[in-house]
Image 1 (cartoon, rainbow, N blue to C red):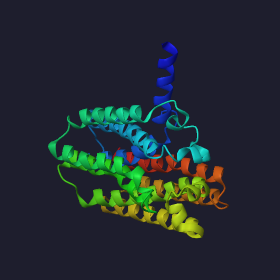
Image 2: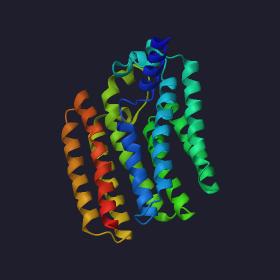
Image 3: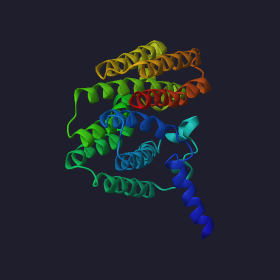
Length: 287
């Protein structure tokens, strides 16, 4: 009995990627950007707690529904062939039940927020559930991921300010560009396998222009973040953080230069530092 429980817990840990926190970081940093800016640098403990837990829970739910959507093809992909729904550690029914439980937990958190934010949370759930299935129908699933990973920023402004100002949408656009850039790097890891099984991605769509378009998206991210800083009259701390980000982006371009699997995956993981650098710049501005 105890061994069976341990196996189930291991399956839950693996399918929710508790052992791989990069997705949580990439979702958390932009949410923190928005919370700090919306709160003028002084977010409430309630905001931090609800949105931090919400990020972790929704990221976990997204991983579960992603594996459910890909359960019939993951076995053909080198990187995903040992996931719980492929190797039998978890059944499809258990995965759907887990997804429902996580969404219920997220709902419990959202119900402590304003009615406006609760309405907006419906969009968050829709995007999280929709994204995994988009790779069957469009070469732009990364755009849906970008929207899903950016929606928490919109909710943060709605909760703090009771409205969604222009600055929130500029931040949303910046994060969209950044997400498509780094998730294209991620898709480059699986590109050959994805072509074989018929899965679509921006890495396949961009083809030999992948590195160039990623670079353009990175420049757009920097331009939009600079615009945010200009509108808010941020000084040298934020500008310095963008210089750091430019250096990190340049390093990522070097990593993906030869399109090697491990190097592309390393470049993807490296984006954690991008989000952190921007966050530090914002926090220092308000000190």
